[in-house]
Length: 209
Image (cartoon, rainbow, N blue to C red; front, side):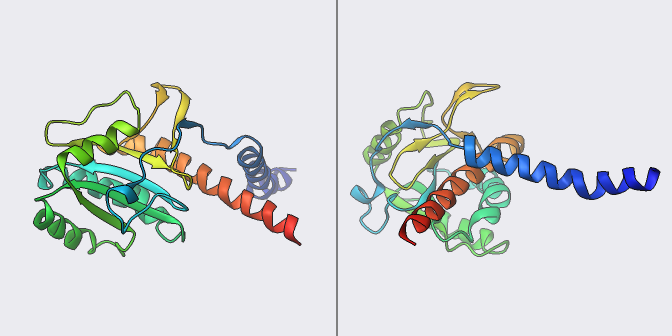
């Protein structure tokens, strides 16, 4: 009897749990759209785009050194988990004049992982403000054009987030100063949006067969 119980715990329960959560993603896992059709980065930097990409958008500001900790948190907790997905990218909107600081940051980040999906776009102050304002959040940029928050932008250029977060209610972004926020919330939400697109792809392929 004891052996049977142990076998159930070790083998059956994990399978049941997996099926439950997999079903939850397929049936209920739709990350809410909070702002539709935000300003495409392509209109500010022609070499980049939000379209057909799952983008993590951030604003590190003019003091790159001061935001290295935020960048490292984001790299370790989110980027390294998802950068191998073909359509995943990270875009940081940077003030012009921060090029040297960004190169130093890239060198340090590259010591941890392949940083080819980290994209840095150098913009004028007015352009950064316009891009941030287009998100239509309840957050504000600091005077140095930075925020510790990063944002999930889907393949259609819509801002995704949470409408009923247990702590914040309406949650537009994720705080890179908080490992808990990245681990416990952002990672889950990125998984949901990736699963959402994988499911849509499977359904489309099924219709074509």
